[in-house]
Every structure is written in structure tokens, then in C-alpha cells.
Image (tube, rainbow, N blue to C red):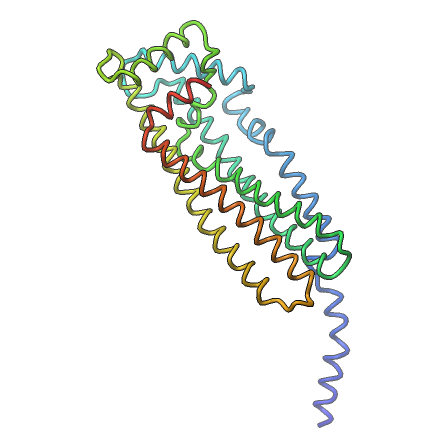
Length: 288
């Protein structure tokens, strides 16, 4: 009996020390650290790929990339072969690595923002009510990071399909304007002289693959978001009426995830139609 009492007393005496050593997610230092990390990730999103790729590919500004891709596309179109010329291959590799770095940053951002949102919601449940505003902001930031990740995954999987987005479209001039005009003619007239161009066939295939990858990613995220939304609504229903903060938290999270699921559904439908008609999708890109 005495041994048991000593053991119990010793455990009781050690409990405060162990509690003091435990780092809580909702503690102010942890929240501060997550804020610093999230700010650093957001700040690094654009300059990091440019800095990391500059030693290998050189410094590409938006204007320089647009000009380089325009010249490479003219060369590719006039080559008459499906194989990319060396200059275009370099740009495709650059765009792949650019978006792969952004996938890594946005993935980390999703994790950090989600942890920050969880910490702030716990803080709201345990401390002042005004923490709810910051928790909602962190939750919306998590959704935004997921959307950014969603758009960068297809750009990494099919970089040529994404690279077409830098075309100047209607503002093109010179040789590029002529090439784009021939491409439009080939897309609109199946019996025209440019309809059977090997380059056009490759570009249509890349646009179609890009759209299908986007469909898979957006549909997967939509299903996951629906399941999470259902979980929050079930928790809201299960919460006792007196737990107003718990009910408010689950209601807010349920609404945000439900709205996100609706937007992802719209994206899935839109990209499905684009994938089924890659010619119209490519024409739309060239009009921008």
C-alpha cells in the first residue's frame, strides 16, 4: 500500500513538470512560429523558383520568357516535325522545374496554414473570442494554398500545356502573329493546309492532358473536401447546445469547406469540357 502511495505521489509530483515541458499547439510561441513560417513561404513563392533556377537557365523575367517562348514556338511550328527543338526543350524543362518548386512550397504552405488554423481554433475555444477572426483567416488561407497547389500540379505534370499560357495571344506581332494565325486556321478548318501539322497535333495532345490532370486533381480535392465538410457538420450536430463556441467553429468550418467543394465541382466540370474539346481550349489560350 505504501509503495502504491509513493508511486501515486511521485506521479502526481511529476505531472506538473511534465505539463510544463509539453508544447501545446495553441500556445502563443507555437502560433508565432507558424505565423513566421507561413509568411516566409508566401514571400518565397515567386522569388524562390527564379533564384534556384537562375544558375542553370539564366534569369527569366516575364517579358523575356514570353519573348523566348514566342521565338521557340515559331521555330517549332516551321520545323515540320513533332520533336521539340533544343530551345523549346530548355524552356519546357525550365517551366517544369519552376512549377515543381512551387508545388513543394505550396504543399508546405497547406500544412503550415492548416496547423495555424487548428492552433487558432483551439485558442478560440480556450481563450478570447476574437481569436475566431484570425482562425477564419487562417482557414481561408489554407483553402487558398490548396487552390494554388491544385493549379501547379498539372503545370508540373504537363509543362508544355502550361507554358502555352504565356503566349501574348492577340497582342502578338511579326513572325509569332503569323504562326498563331496559321495555328488558328488549322484548328478551325480540318481540311486546311495547317490542320495536319505535327506541331499542332502535339500541342493539342498537351492541352488535353493538362486539362485531364486538372480534372483528376480538382475532383480528388472535391471528394476530400466534401468528406471533411460532412465531418464538421456531424460534429456540429453532436455538440451540446450550451457549447456555443464549439458549434460556431464547426459551423464555420462546415460552411467554408462546403463552399470550397462547390468551387472545386465547378472547376472539375469546366476542365472536363475543356479536355473533351482541346481545340477550343487552345483557341481560347491564343485569344488571351
